[in-house]
Image (cartoon, rainbow, N blue to C red; front, top):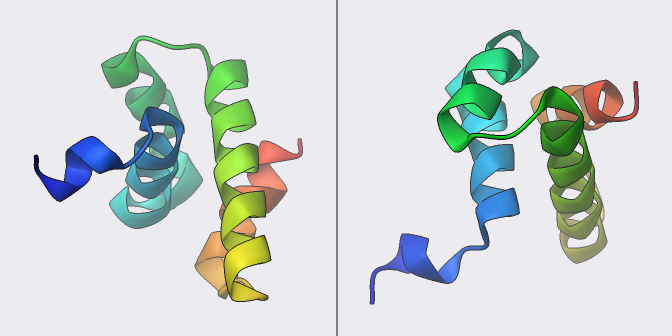
Length: 71
């Protein structure tokens, strides 16, 4: 089993936004994954909060995704 198969889809979506160009690509990420922007925001919020809990802090580009997910 590959590593990406072990990562939940909501977290993969978060990574796609975080590492793929930030929130400016969110519409495309949602489209590719067949979900709405609101679903993507909920998934990014969940993943951001888990990341924060595990790591204790967010880098600025991670915080930007969390801020966007909270809008």
